[in-house]
Length: 55
Image (tube, rainbow, N blue to C red; front, side, top):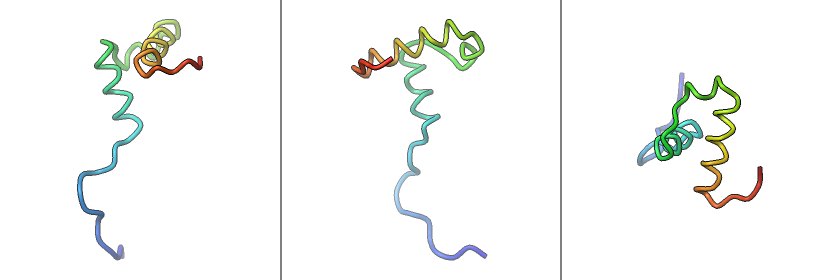
């Protein structure tokens, strides 16, 4: 038996949701994760959107 109530408001954003948003923004999709080179390019493009310098 579960006690208590659900938290108010919208559900918290999951990591997967954030990744999907960035992929949509840069024109990528999950299928590119199977190709390591294409995925690396997508990750670098996403990092440049965020202003991150680490690789």
